[in-house]
Image 1 (cartoon, one colour):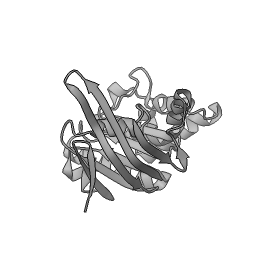
Image 2 (image 1 turned 90 degrees about the horizontal axis):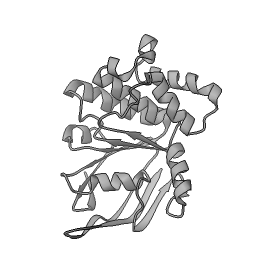
Image 3 (image 1 turned 120 degrees about the vertical axis):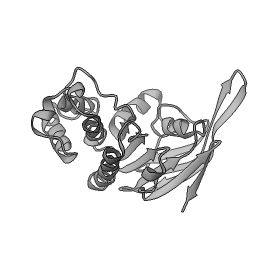
Image 4 (image 1 turned 90 degrees about the vertical axis):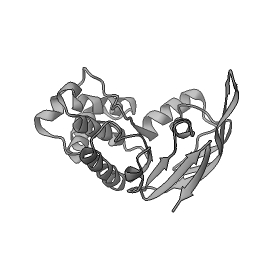
Length: 224
């Protein structure tokens, strides 16, 4: 479960201070898929960076499965992020010279999974997202866009993190493939008992989430 309370973040720019996130509070349950939508510059990316421990808030707290993150040192934040947060990027961000299986295994290595278990876990997760057989040994350049995104999803969920952050996960895909990816995210969230937070500009994606929030000028509001 994710609990965010009174989160605030301000940046200093040549044009003055920009309050990118303004007193944001919300919760998201285990197994739930939550969508956050908003225009460019609304604060979506900043909020995602804060939740993923890529940046620190000026005020407020983030609690993941009972762990309060604001008091962690930089080293502890890095370790927590590797073990407890999974990322799904719009451009996939797969390592080009590694196979699909090796891309997933790499995350398990960062999360300190036993070496003997990594290959089996990677194959299990890739099968869960619909990739098996010879495709496991293919490098990203020999996979379609939808297949690459499936690898990215398997990689994000592989170490069983309680929080998955997806940044425009269907932005590079055609409509039919994007629909399959959204369905896969929902199913895997339930199967792996993770909270999935999707940042998207696509109302069709947001409509399929369990809950939807809109952010504008750093202010987050839940929508029915």
